[in-house]
Length: 219
Image (cartoon, rainbow, N blue to C red; front, side, top):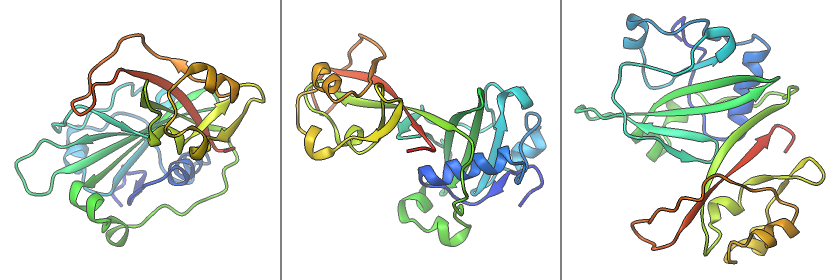
């Protein structure tokens, strides 16, 4: 591992992100105290992982001197694919969490091919789950159709407003039903409408809303 990296390996699921955040809070892995310089940016490679707190590092926007496609959100991660002429373009994953009122970020690099084939875990190492003792809340965005509730929403945790806990949406109950705010309210699920604006999907002529939800280590 290069000395300015927090971790070298791959990460693929919520428990990995929570474990890395917990290790960072415990000071068991190094965290960035300042922005990478040009020499350190040139050393970024597949497997490089950086963890930092905005308040501690002063970093508000991550830069790495590489060219990327527009972001795409998937569950807890925001993905970027490298725009490059070489045969092994990288994939950048960014995960954001709030820990004790401080905003933290994980930035992980891998190759597109490794992610598709699943060979990254054999090449590097996967995160070992550790006990999570801090309240680590990861905020994500879910895009769902007004006409049909998509599977991406129904298989994720959403916040239960009444009991202030996190619960699982039963796919058998909600998938395939029209997205009706009254139905969700009856389930005590909290969805906050992000915008009244609509957009057209290339494959489906449906209108979409974006909702925010949060996932916690206490799921």
